[in-house]
Amino acid sequence: MPELTATAQYLLDLLGIFGFALSGGLLGVRKDFNFFGTVVLAEAAGLGGGLLRDLVLDVPSIAFTDPGYPIAPVAAALIVYISRPLARPPYLFDVLDTVGLGLFSVTGTIQGLQHGMDAVPSAALGVITAMGGGILASAVARELPSMLRWDSDRYAMPSITGAGTAAALHTAGALNLVTATVAALAAFTFRLMALHFRWRPRRSTTWQTVPTQPPPLPHTDALLTPPSHNAFTDTVRLRALSVQPSPPPQQLPPPPVAETMQLRAIDPSSTGTSQAAPLPDTAHRVQPHRALPDGGANA
Image 1 (cartoon, rainbow, N blue to C red):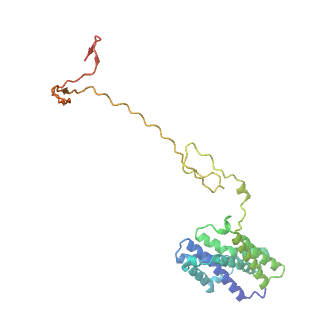
Image 2 (cartoon, helix red, strand yellow; image 1 turned 180 degrees about the horizontal axis):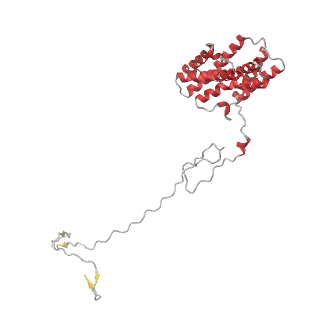
Image 3 (cartoon, helix red, strand yellow; image 1 turned 120 degrees about the vertical axis):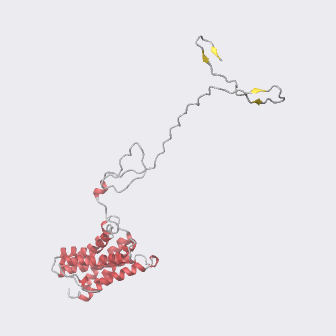
């Protein structure tokens, strides 16, 4: 691989770091981080894969010796942080992230081959280099990495394509600058097609065969049905609260009848109308009917 000069590899590394850092900075903006937090995520996404690669190879990381490596994520974070959403061209950041994916999957594989690793371990190292930064940035942001979710676009397969193609070219003795670029373009094209056609990974057969019906509701309806005990169920079903008719109000007993009545005397000398005159203090009162011991009545 004499054509893969240090200058070409250095420029490719910076371009890949910048593309990954843009995606990490965009994650920080979406999480409403401040500028420092956005820079941290950009550095993690841009340099995380290279740091993992250097740890596996047990070599000093160039990210701490060359100022260009940490400066590229800072520039990417600044661009993402101050740019307006309407000014961002559609799919621009996805395209740049795809550039980094294709480049790092190939350059990581080449790094492993240059350090005496076999083709298959070198390809695995290329995949780690391409995906490690995104996983590290997602872990810092406390978010599930998109390449691990079934509902995200294919991310791992393009990196495996690029790394596997580079390893296969090395085994065939045809790995050079041109063929390495072709391998990176293959990963790049695969990723763009997955974005455009929204290709999704296939869900597991175990998940598809597990019933997802919730258990029957108890006798009393509830607003929220508790989730199923099935570990694979990830949905919660809502059920409307059924309104039961309220029982009729209890009939109150009638009020007790008064035992006394007050009568008013009528003045016969009044003409036309009869007016009631107030009774004296010794007003006649009618006592309630009570039976006498001898069977008579007392009025």
